[in-house]
Image (cartoon, each protein chain N blue to C red):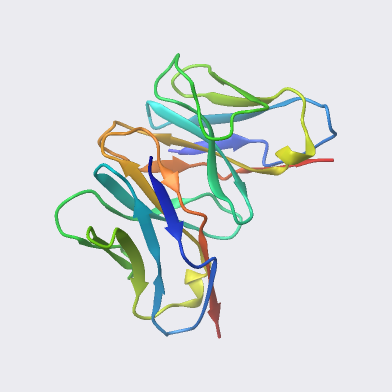
Length: 113
Length: 113
């Protein structure tokens, strides 16, 4: 069975500072990895995903995540956060060719002025 | 395209009452899902449907039933609501197996008193 651990439930960070949101997973089979973002009072939307190829994947709004197979991690980073990045971020994993996604418990990103 | 729509947006029920949450998608997706989101618990899968005419239990199916009415619509029914079912409910859909990305509706906030 697969599982996802998001190590921090909340991360406060000053505006324009860098941030890293940590995600580790466990699986006995190959997986695909995702980060979803949930802005206040909205549903989730895909931020970025790793399926294959380059282990570094990037979103259009400056986030990036690196797949590290040896450490079973998929940490999310941004070099300079903005107030509009205030949201909850969910790491998720799906076994290759499976129809279900397993979500972590989420990390709430608080941007301090 | 409206994407994934859910009705109602808010609902208050008394213990023992029944209700149906509606979900529809206009993306011609095969797979549809119902999740519940509770603080600190992330998203937990209630039921899913890999195609029209099929449904399967997820992680927390007790107290719920579902109907995949057609390819577009996937409803969630609470036959006898309990306070433990107070939550935010999200419907999601996914296209072909190789797309992997799930598209979420805006959610239904349900309170059971």
